[in-house]
Image (cartoon, rainbow, N blue to C red; front, side, top):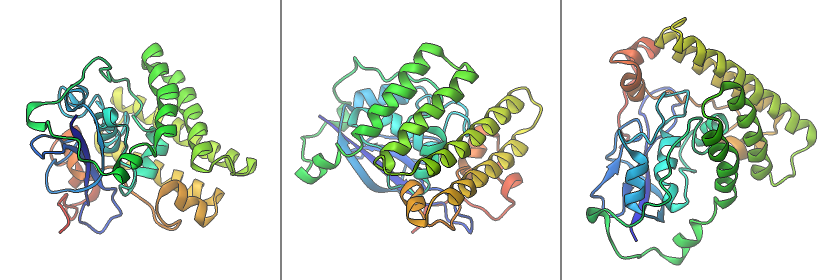
Length: 289
């Protein structure tokens, strides 16, 4: 059986951008870009899984059905979908805590996870040489993944992209997520505060999605408003949680704010020059040394 490797690299700039993540097979002969680059990154998680199945999930454009960037998800969700056969996530990437809470493990759109595809691409076939520690690590995220199967995938397959259902389902999924993150030890008051923050973010994203699709706003305004929404969500969550709890949920200090809208992905999604209009001329999407 082949090995699927989660890789990441940083956007080198003055802003607090999330890491870009992508997937590579263990031999290094095949990679999937996930709304960004697919070389030069650092491996940070890996698991045994069918590389043929991963390749089928990634089709047709290596984005795994994350069709509308910042609406369906970001590179983290695309990578998680491709990593699905291995049972691992891109947990550990900078900004993943934020994207996980906004979009869930696998994003807000349906995808075909090809349950009947197995085996490996010829270029990716290799012996199972994962250490015992690595094989144990593969099982760490099983609760979150099972939660996503239940709340994200089954429901979305059944009901499609009905927006009202999306919000209801995403709130249920988020409630399950915070139960897992905090091992059912978060006070009811703090849970209610987080659920309100999530509800406000979902409502704002629903409005932005509608305005973008009906061309009431352009891509640049949409991205700017999306960034404002994510900042407010982080602020609201920080006001609810202790510093330690915030770090558990978001993976970074309580006074840090992460930006998910990656410059390269913006240009790919909305056209060349979009990132410069959003961020100015300074930001460059490059791999950190």
